[in-house]
Amino acid sequence: MTTRSLALVCLLLSATVVGIGPALADQSATVDDGSLPLASAEQQVVTGETSIAPGTELTVRLRSNDAAAPFLHQQTARVADDGSFAAVFDLSNVAPNTSYELTIHYDGQTLAERTETLVACDGDCTDTVPETPTPTPAPNDGVVQVTQGEVAEIPVAIDGTETAVFSLGGDDVNYLVNASLIDGDGDGTVTVRFDTANAGTDGETLSVADASDSLMVTREETELPSTLDPASYEYRVFYGDGTDGRADDVGTLLVEANDTAEEQFAVDDGPEFGFERSVYTTRQGGTARLTVVLADAEAGTVSIGGRESGYEINATVRDGDGDGTVTLLFDTAAAGRDGTTLTAAAETDSVTVESGSEVTLDTRLDATEYDLTLYRGDGATDDAADIGTLSVQASNGTTNDRGSTATVADGPTNGDDTESGSGIPLEPGSLALGAGGLVAIVGLGIILRPLL
Image 1 (cartoon, one colour):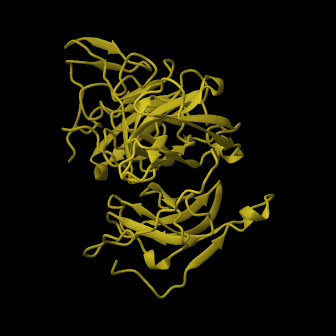
Image 2 (cartoon, rainbow, N blue to C red):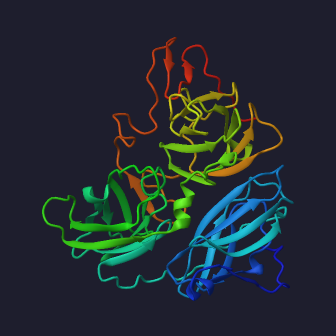
Image 3 (tube, one colour):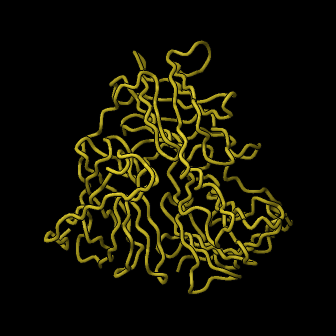
């Protein structure tokens, strides 16, 4: 970028950790000042170096300091063999001159933190994504270790065949997922990436490390009420297209406890008004679960998207069962079309979509990031109480942000006989009561608006 300043030296901030061993205390990260400032444009790249082991992942987060322009963008960055990393952001929907915090996280610790200001784009502001060598997975002797909340990389040997089925878990651990693997480059190995933070949720749990390989989920994973338990999970590899007979290879995924990861999924004894999590993920055509902590508030108003993302909808939620939370179900397949886009997971809670707030779409909802904004009370105001991000990830064989191809097999995904994202069939002029008590009057005008 032509506006980059090269006069500053790199900022090195070490993680300050209390009560842990020297290994974690020595972990650090640097942010390359040559990659700053970031501009209000697409493909903005934050680069740096770290002492974290090659092949592991850092989280790079950009969070607004300006309540008038709230945003939160978060990307994972894989550490290369030389210790470098790069995170790519689309900031075209963020106004110039917005102040934000840039932080780098690993294993629940903040390794680097600095305050920056977004600049206006003058000319061609597209950054070049650096080419970094892909770390070679170390031999694991059949055992792969990972900490709760992190991503495990499991190398699967495919000997003499282009396809195999990967199966992780079983009845004894109350979790199971199967996926078909294809060795696209013929090197005899497919490295499966297993995201323990997304396990059992609508987020992407399985992907592949090499973009030339591919993966398709053939048995939807078990839904979990909280983060994946620390335990030993057996994985099995079957050459061919099925799981009949004896496995051709077996191994163990050892998930180690992480108190910080557990806290992500727990509501504090004295919860504050806001989103339960800062980032939610789902696939195109899937249904995202967005939990709002109302605490002592009578109501909260949630806004999904905005003018920059090409889609928007606003809704007011109320807690009917007294647990202090409301979980919104956002149907990405119905978004922008006739049908019920937002409902409540609990029948006693209520969701009221603001009339005329939903933008109409000619095609399905784009795979991109959508701002989540929460306001206290009934209706959106100028004072946002909390912000977050909904990441809608591509499906059906399209390339995701990590450069791998992940495809989900057709079929029910919500534990019932209804396909994920399908609407409720109604005859014209009929009245239906959707999940969570939201009334949709079909034939009397579900109000959608064009994006102005």
